[in-house]
Image 1 (cartoon, rainbow, N blue to C red):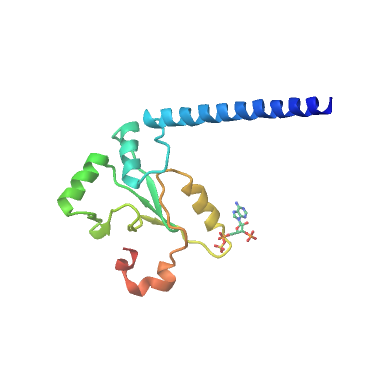
Image 2: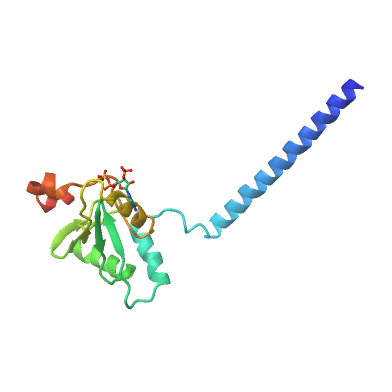
Amino acid sequence: MGCWTTSCDLGHLKAHSKVSVFFTMILIFTYLFYCLTGYCDSMPSPLYVHQSFRSKLLPKEGKKLAHWNGSIVRELPEQDATDVEDEKRQRGLGYETYNNLSVSNNFGTKEFPQAIIIGVKKGGTRALLEFLRVHPDVRAVGAEPHFFDRFYEKGLQWYR
Ligand SMILES: Nc1ncnc2c1ncn2[C@@H]1O[C@H](COP(=O)(O)OS(=O)(=O)O)[C@@H](OP(=O)(O)O)[C@H]1O
């Protein structure tokens, strides 16, 4: 009698694990299906992919984006991905001038800021940065750049 009870429990566990494996497989296949059919565009992607995606969604008139670099916000001029690619081609691989400043536009490189957050210690600037960083079109480096108080003598080239 005791042995019968034990074998019944094991059978129940086996059936339970089979159901778990079955549902796991369904989840994996569903994920693969959506990825292969292009529904995974919400995955993190480089800046210019975001710009390209944004240009498909937004009308051309009146669009302005706030981008970040450190504690620094910059607003991009109104242009779509095609304009960006044209500019890149005209101005050489990976670099473009922006407001007469030469900047690198490769993904992962630093760019000049268009706006700056200035705050006293414990003024809540980190919280503001993190809130803005939630936006997919906002880029920011992790640490405070301290350009004006520590690296000003190094000049604008320091940003590159
Ligand atoms: N919305 C709001 N309201 C009130 N207080 C807030 C808010 N956002 C951030 N904080 C508090 O600000 C402190 C961090 O400020 P900073 O990011 O400027 O700090 S730092 O000087 O850069 O380290 C930090 O305070 P302490 O926790 O006392 O260190 C945060 O709790």
